[in-house]
Amino acid sequence: MSDSSYFELRLLLEELCCDLSRFEHLSNEGLAPEHVQIDREVASGQPGAFADIRVRPRGRESYFIEVKYGCPDEAILRSLTRKYAQPGEVVRHASRVVLVVDRRGRADWEGLVCAARAALLGADLKLEVWDEERLAAALRAHFDVELGEIVAERLVDVRQAIDHAHEWQRQIDREQSSVGLHAGVALGDLHLLSLRPFSRTHLGFIGDCINVAARLMSHATVDEIIVSNSFYQRLPESARCDFCHNEPVEARNVGRIKAWKATMR
Image 1 (tube, helix red, strand yellow):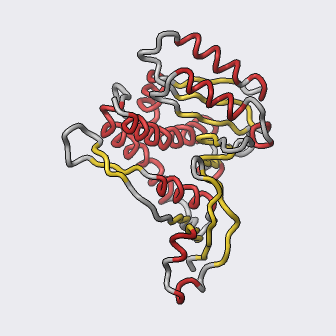
Image 2 (cartoon, one colour):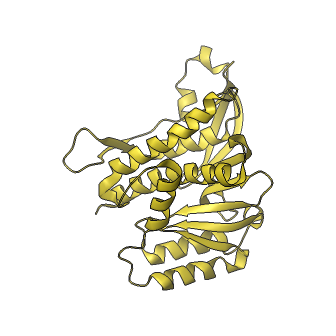
Image 3 (cartoon, one colour):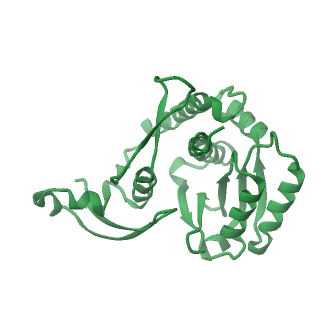
């Protein structure tokens, strides 16, 4: 199984976990959607170390979600140690790490869980594990989705589950006043991948520019667009006057990005 397939699967699962965590706070605690803030690729305090997801429910302690489907045990433990062994200010305000990982095919599952728990002791973080069974049960309970196996060969099924999960958010949004648009724009190469073997009807893209654009978008406030410097430099002079300089934005595996912002009003 290719690394690119697992990479695409992890990206899809990150999106799915964002929806699941938000919905569980809404369903179990009665919070409004705007009271559950979810950030992706959050700097954990160590150079070049980014948590996959941070969840901040209002009035409750924040926590992190790490999606490690398809990663070897050693890579998972290295990642947790690098991000959380020496906690920065962001990590010290969190209560736990949710590890989303596949159980199937691992020779020493209990050993992996114990080692992952030990990697978080220095930050005084608790470990919560979401394996295939936990994810499938949550999808079934909250979204009435029967996913079956969560494996790279079934990327399309995962994509459809995410689309189904988004339906509840759209319904909630229609009952609230509009909160505006957040946008991030970046230039770069994209790689076109088939999400189903030998199929030309189910395709997806990967590339650093997707990561950069998502990171820029996360820094945009309401009705604001943040663009990379390479995109800004390609704008005509008449369009550049609408932009002002933005503080550099850090993106995982990319570094600090020079950026520009404009208000869409």
